[in-house]
Every structure is written in C-alpha cells, then in structure tokens.
Image (cartoon, rainbow, N blue to C red; front, side, top):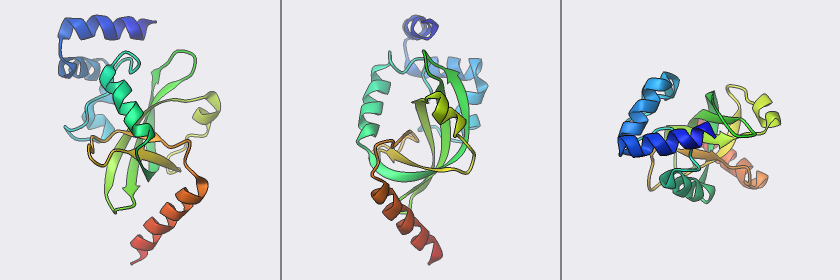
Amino acid sequence: MFGRVFSGVFGRMFGSSEKLNDLVAQLRPDLSRESLGVGPAFPGVVPNPLLSSDARKRNAELRTGTLALGVLVGWREVGGDGSPRVVLMFDVETADGVSFRGVADEDLTITELTRLAPGRTLPVRYRPAVMDHYVALARDADPAHVQRLSDEIASRKRT
C-alpha cells in the first residue's frame, strides 16, 4: 500500500521520472546507478512498477525479449506486497557476444529467494533494440534452448 501511495504522490509532486529516480537514489543509495554498476542509460528502479506505465510496458516487452545468460552478481530487496520484490544484478552474455551489466526487478517466491547465490547462471531476457540494462528472469525458457545458448557462449570463449 505504501509503495502505491509513494509512487502516485511523489510522481505527481516531482513531475518527471528523472526527478523521481533522483529521489529514490537519495532514499536508497544502494539502488543508485553507480551502486548497481550501470550507466546513465539505465532508467532507474521505480518505487512501484505496477503503477508506472513505462515499467509495465518494459516488463511486457522483456517477457518476449531475446534470451541471454546472466551470472548473478548480487541483489537488493526492495519490498513487495505478499512476495519479496528484489532487484537482481547480472553480468549478462548474449548469443551475439555482447556483455553488459543487467538489472532485473522481480517478485520472487520465498523458495526462489533462498536459491539466490552469487555466481549462479540464470537465463534472462533483454531488449537488444533498447539496451537500457534492464533484463527479466526467463522462467519460461526451454531448457534445451538455454543449453544450446550456454554451449554457444562457452565455445566462443574457448576460441
């Protein structure tokens, strides 16, 4: 409830998403662009992605995004209604050989939360046309497709 009120009230007060992102970075320095290891193209972590039309659009696009592999670097718990909301940081490798720091804003189950471990490789989806550092866990990814991608990335590193 607080997140919804916070997002709505502050969104109207500050007018622009940039000002809201600056406020979030002040309130939660662990969620700043510098702390997450991303550059200025990263739009920031919103207090409540359910109330942000940009975040809803981004999440819908990420669900159908391109598959890549992400090595979990770390995470920050940011709250949640019912299940933990976590910002996950990944070092991402794509099939095209592109590497970047990816950030996923996810609602996890308690079981998923207990399985988080730095260095764990997970399938993620990203938007190659946007490259704003946002990724999403690819929970629906076909294990055979993930294995082919993993083999392709590993063979490229060997050569």
